[in-house]
Length: 168
Ligand SMILES: NC(=O)N[C@@H](O)C(=O)O
Ligand code: NI
Image (cartoon, rainbow, N blue to C red):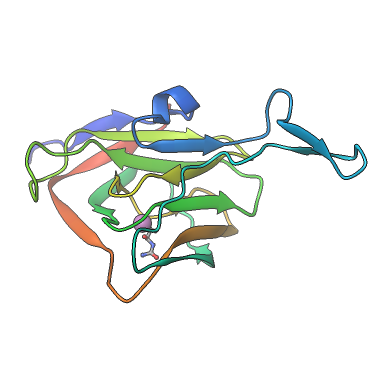
């Protein structure tokens, strides 16, 4: 019985996540002070992309919490639009991505996993391989901003060998 390949989830940072999308979080000086000085606006922090024939939608997800080590069996991507996961809670949660494969239609590349700190949200760029929304604590409630359109906008890849994702 071969042991599963293991990868350790890393703390989520903008630089580490940059090849896959953006991290949204409150930090540093806001871009604008608004509302009579009572609000800091961290302005326009994600590259949203819904392509031709689609539009932006906001959905709410209520997902079952998972636990670490997490057995990853499938990654997916949305070829026609970006997808943002915005937690509506203050818990850590798991973000899973995979590098592009070598050829069009081929399998994804290396898997990466990150533990998002409370308050961190992410936006996957269009076509980025990722694990599905993965809370680590209840309630797993998130706002999700992604493409609404006629097509499925979904490609799934079941890994040849599951990957075991461990904590940092
Ligand atoms: N399918 C769906 O609405 N959610 C997935 O895209 C996901 O990434 O969780
Ligand atoms: Ni998705």
